[in-house]
Image (cartoon, rainbow, N blue to C red; front, side, top):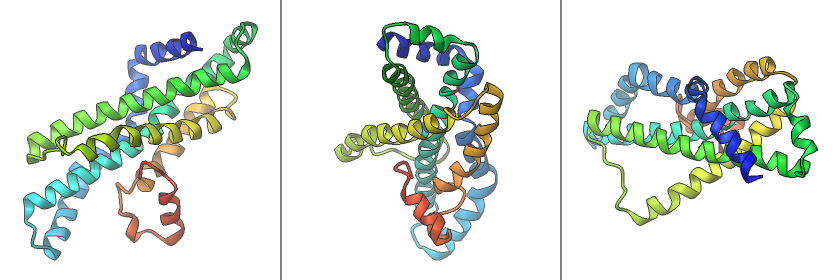
Length: 218
């Protein structure tokens, strides 16, 4: 199982374009925020508070970073889980079943590799956005606070596990890689809203708010 997990991880890392596309949801949220949403949201916040522009920027930037981590934990396992469909479409799953590994261990290798990928990609997104907003707005992440650093990795892990479970449930139903690719935009589009990036949860309809509360990442 460990060897099969390593194989899935290696194939994902080698596919540079696939890695980039798995981050599409988070990248779209980032571009929308920087280009369109930030100016209006900052103006609305400044008109109702006395905290000042720097505090507003810090709040909005870190809010976006949290939302991007929530999106990444959902979309990157979905992209990596496409390997399951590819193996099944090309008959490699038959070779796996002929080995000593049972179906549960084969499925476990896909789930474990996608969970690891989700965690690693969240760390990449956190580092990249932390660097960007640190340079652009002088935003400093609270690395010195033990509670923040202690809780961050478990939250990333839980976020990735839930994203992987969703990815496995959906991908198992896809007969071909083309069908699986068509599924991705359907998941990525609402991911930004459910993560509270495009709009805050407080202004959503009640059913949508309940949906948001079911996502650990959000």
